[in-house]
Image 1: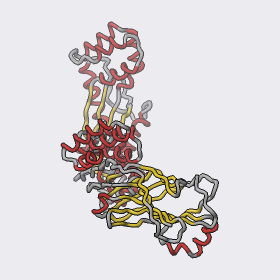
Image 2: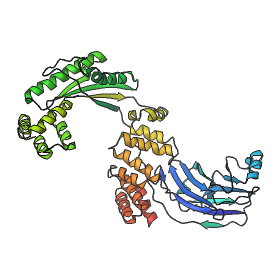
Image 3: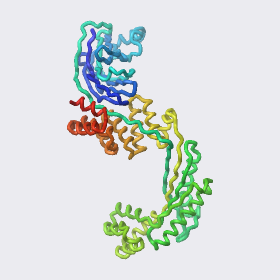
Image 4: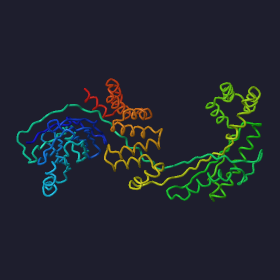
Length: 467
């Protein structure tokens, strides 16, 4: 005998690409099998269905077989999906010998009575317009004989689930990538000549030279500029420190250029005579006596640098000596920035590159990698998580990563990413979906209305579904 059980009623899939239905659950086979995490996703011209089936309460006779066929139905239209065959232990043998031909492409499972047992089901089919308002039905062939008499329909729950929409990032005409670092080069006191073997200079110089050489050897990148920025500490007159910072940076640039053998036009030199910003950071992180009073002087840009140093030195001599010996050496540093042009990658190349050098990929390239995975899968979600890590302040990267989190029921993480997703219609719609799932329906409706007013069709359909 065959039963029809509606797992998902009224899908109402919107036309936007990569929209998802939230997870649901149901009971089948006389309430003995739990169907959990029912999830449907529309991605372009494909329709994906996934669910988890728990057999813990099912007692299957050895000679028994049950065939489950998920089916998309709407009016006179229907599409049967990959069937699920649950065999008793003896039926397993018959299935493997001959009966598997009756169910081509079926997912076969052998029930082991008395044991905890579950499995995941995933399949896909071509999308058709009639699926916009369809049910997902589980057909139960309780004897495995294909009998269609005495059909029954059990509706679990009618509910339109709010949907999210990913945004395809714009392709960039030219990709650039920058690497930065900091080296602590020791120069003789009040001098600007560089001694490569002096103190820690061999190690610090290698930081810069080795980084440049690694980039030079990478066929994916072409160096367009190298900036060297010299800093001095605040002690001594400002004019003298300006001379030291500028000329030491120029000396370092000339030394590095000769070693890496690059055109002088690529290099630029900058100087900060006194690193007051660095000193203020140390003060804020410290518990030094009179910290707030010293910080007030150090942060006051209306006071000329030499007077600032004199005020700190004269009013707080003990603290000044501590700062001079502990922090000032670290304020004498050379920062470097290497900027490159990165060649474009094919989707196949990007799929490999995202595992090793994701920083070289554009958002659009990462998005194309995501399209090679099943929407909602672990790999699919990971791509958008990596994009958000590589582009932490980009609204599109954060929106897409938030949508992936919503598909995975990670609502707290989604809200955090949505804080940086901007105020686009799609971002407001995603906020509405998130608030709906955490039980704040009034907030959800508020965001759906905002998104709909901005022209988001998905948000309009979400509002209709809630109403």
